[in-house]
Amino acid sequence: IELYSGRAMPTKITASIGDEILFTVKDDSYHNMAEERKSRGDARLESGELRKGESYSLVFQDKTSVTFYDRLDSDIRVDIEIR
View 1 (cartoon, rainbow, N blue to C red):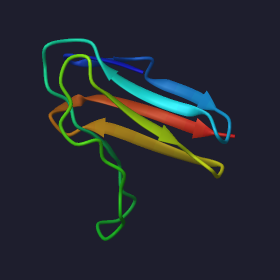
View 2 (view 1 turned 180 degrees about the vertical axis):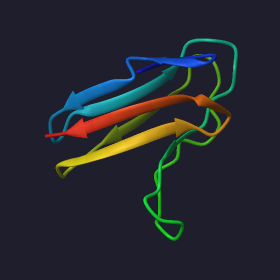
View 3 (view 1 turned 30 degrees about the vertical axis):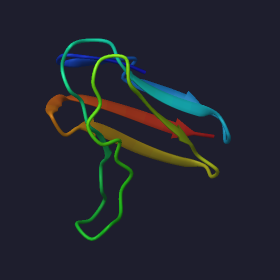
């Protein structure tokens, strides 16, 4: 998933259990991808601050549907479905 100022490409993906999901920064902006929580007390996955050329990798071991958003650019959202 490529991250740019104001957008991600693609914004929806479907992957299989064990596939690597990779967020990569392609512009000069900073990005921080975080899993959207279903309730306030839930733990979440978060990349921390990434800059151009840096990546955040995830591998899911269960079927799930999650949404990630950029904490530094709220226009960026990515839906991930693991089958």
